[in-house]
Image 1 (cartoon, rainbow, N blue to C red):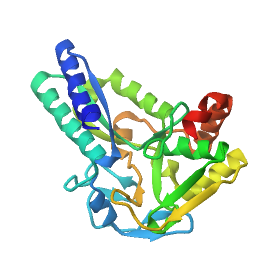
Image 2 (spheres, rainbow, N blue to C red; image 1 turned 135 degrees about the vertical axis):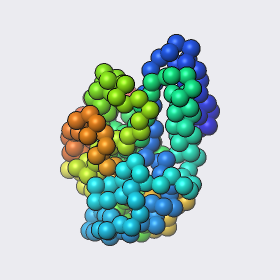
Image 3 (cartoon, one colour; image 1 turned 60 degrees about the vertical axis):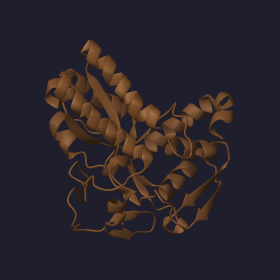
Image 4 (cartoon, one colour; image 1 turned 30 degrees about the vertical axis):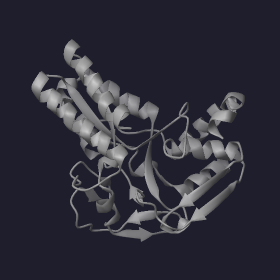
Length: 260
């Protein structure tokens, strides 16, 4: 992970420096510290966990997490390598005049994503329902109420085009980029949606105990990037799940051994 994320970023930056190329970096919401997220006040609802109103910590509101949420604390090795990459990119911008923008992305999804347990949760969930595999709810009572916002790759691509067309405006800027409230979903809600789309119901185990890197909730506040670009995500969870299901069914023989 260090070689891929951090060393890989440095290698790409060196190429950009030599050719004076522009640089767009896809970072992650996982740069925000786990402990600080877990210390927020939450409310358990029937199908999801939600933020309690009137949070005392800066950078979080009913709209989700914005770029002012503190970075002090630990986050996971994955999040750490991404945050370190952000800092190195900013150094290259200042020292070598490279134009760059950093997008801290939510859970990316869409067809052609080979979903695994640790990455690509929506594709994994749809695939397991189609191929009638098994899944599990881990942590927070084992009810699957953890919430994330998901971002379709087409929506992300639209934003990248906007940024590339006017990179001077976005140079050295960090944006939180996600599906936002409208495209947020819990695992329990994702299960129901997969059942509706595929017509299949599968076994889902339950493990109540939290794991070290678990967080109950993360929704991206897109206020900054929307104000700067006019961009908003368009694809909602129902459409996303249907699109992934269609892709899997169209390529079922090929994907059977890759996504089961």
